[in-house]
Image (cartoon, rainbow, N blue to C red; front, side, top):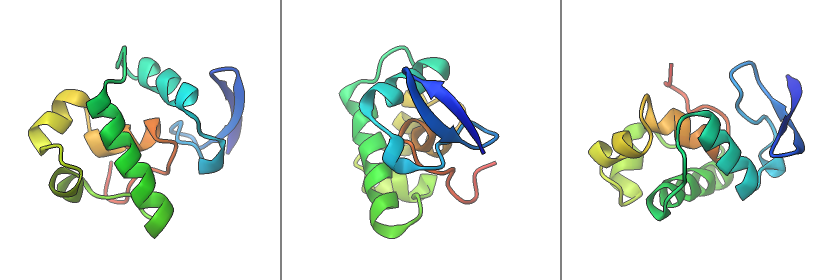
Length: 105
């Protein structure tokens, strides 16, 4: 675990850049992580997915898989890949300040 600055805030991250303490997250950190991962601006659809991921993690202790994300968030899998290229569940979790979902490479 490493402490790094994201959006001028010191946060604990793992070797892949995922926050290890979800309580350190805020929307400015989310926007900075998104930019660093090629998403210039988080739209309402991005936020819908990010908040769904966070809510699921905070209530169940684990992040949803891409399959359940597509079924339950209201955003179809095809659109998830447009919003979050290179792995929607993984990138949405990173932006949302939660650990990498199980099953993500």
